Structure formats: C-alpha cells, structure tokens
Length: 120
Picture 1 (cartoon, helix red, strand yellow):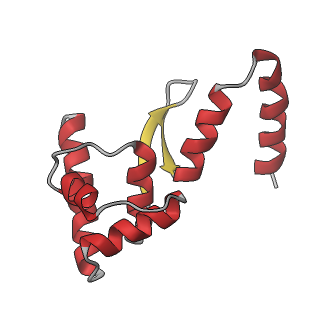
Picture 2 (cartoon, rainbow, N blue to C red):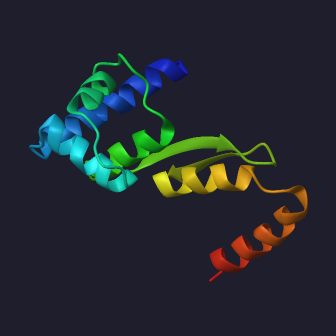
C-alpha cells in the first residue's frame, strides 16, 4: 500500500470517527483549533482533508485525531533500523521543530534531560 493510500485511509477513519461522535465539521474544526491553540479553523479545512483535496500538516492531523478521540501513530525507523510505532501529537511535533533549531552543543544537554524525564 502506498503512503498516499495509507494517508487516505487514515483520513477516512478520522471522518468516520467524527461521524460516530455526531460532530459536524465545524464542531470538529473547533476542537482541532482548541487543541492547536489557534483562534479558529474552518469547517472547509476539515472537508478538504476528509475529501483528500488537501493534505493536513502532521500536527494538524494529530490534533484532528485527538479531536475525534483517536490517536495518530506512525511507524518510523529508529537508529538501529528497527521499525517502531510512535504516537504523534501536536505537542511532540512542536517540540521536534524546537529541537531542530538547537545548536550542536546544546543537543547532549537536552538528550540528558529527556532521558531523565522519560525514565521516571
């Protein structure tokens, strides 16, 4: 299955989840906006995503999943070339963007902090 068809299947599942919850597109858009911490998101955005006419950013897709009581999990290769599942959330995407801006000298410090935090 191609990555495009997998993404289409995810969007179809998110549409079905929205419908199961009895949410209108605007209600789903309002939930996504609240999760992302933005003022608003149009129901047209939800419609375009559901109809596969626009590809949402990964953080928007994760927020959309959360808005309809689902989780977005992707499979990625770790440094040992093993396929692992990782839950995607808008917060994690934002953190990844921040980390990508770090200076090389800062990375070991942040890695140590993350290890300490996640080992609890």
